[in-house]
Length: 197
Image (cartoon, one colour):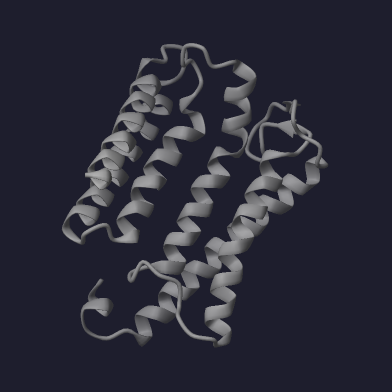
């Protein structure tokens, strides 16, 4: 029952944020539609995996990626949400999406990090611990907007220098690329159903 309640809550949050994306008249239709479509695709595939594979971590990660895509720009225009809070969430929201993708690449297809005490397993665990630190660095810089934004505003809770946000984003992208390499290595070593996945 708790699993179904959590699924329902995640879907409800996603639907509210998706509806918010679609109601923005001041944004281009594609800007509002793409995050909503992204959520629907990731949440549908993730939900199917969770249901068919009894809560498989890969399914939950896909659902979280869908929610993070909406979260990155979904607070803008919600009633009662201050523009500063929406700008703050948007400034690090895409870094969250990339962090979740990095975890997905490091854990696919088993849903778990490499086991054992070898260098590969230790590197995977250390990488996952680094992602939240890098994400926090992007959220607590002195300015909002992130590397992809042309406008910068003061971050009311930021105390880290702006350049640290760029370092955080580069670190996340490097981990994501490392995860992509790990997928290739895992595929070459896999056999049977895991190789087919």
